[in-house]
Image (cartoon, rainbow, N blue to C red; front, top):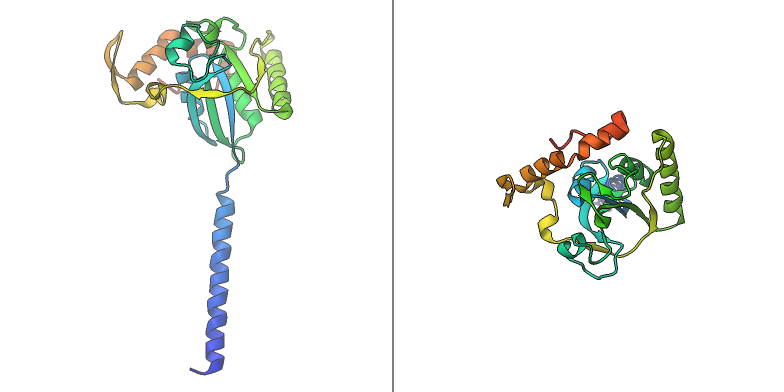
Length: 225
C-alpha cells in the first residue's frame, strides 16, 4: 500500500478516535452527578422516605435514627424512648438536579413544624422533627427556610436545626416499607406492607393535617392513596 494512503488511513483513524473520545467525554459530563446527603426527622420515617423518594433528583432515602446516645440502636429501643434518638431519613440527592434549599422547603411543608410533641398520631421524642446540618451554609439555608415557613403560616416553627450526628440505618424490615409486597399480619388482618402503609398513613391523619396546615403548598398530599 502506498505510504501516502497509509498516512491518510492513520489520520482518518486518529480523527475517528478523537471524535469518539469527545462524544464519550460529553456523555459523561451530561450524566455527571453531584451526590450529597442530608438527614431530616419528620415523624414516621416510612412516610418521609415515601415522600422524598418520589422527588426528581433524589437518588435514595434510607430510614434510620440519629441524635441519641447509643450506637446502632434498634427500632424497639428508639420507640421505647431508651436512646434519645429520633426517627430520621438520610436523603441522597443529586445537587445538579435539586438544591438543598428546595429539599428543605419541601420537607417543612410535608410535616407539621408547629408540633413539638411528635407528629400526627405518633407522639413522643422519637417522633419529633429536626433538620440536621453539615456546615454553616446548610444551617443558614435551613434557618432561612424556617423563617419563611413561619411567615407563611403566621405561627412559630418548633422544628430545630441541629448539627449533624451519626446516622444509623434502621433494620431491613423498615426500608422501603411503603412499596414492599411482603405479607405481614396487621390489626387489619394479613396485608402487604404497601397496603398496610397506606392504611396507617390515612388512619394517622398525616395528609389531612398537612393539607389543613399548608393547603395547596403541601407537596405530597394524596400521592400515597
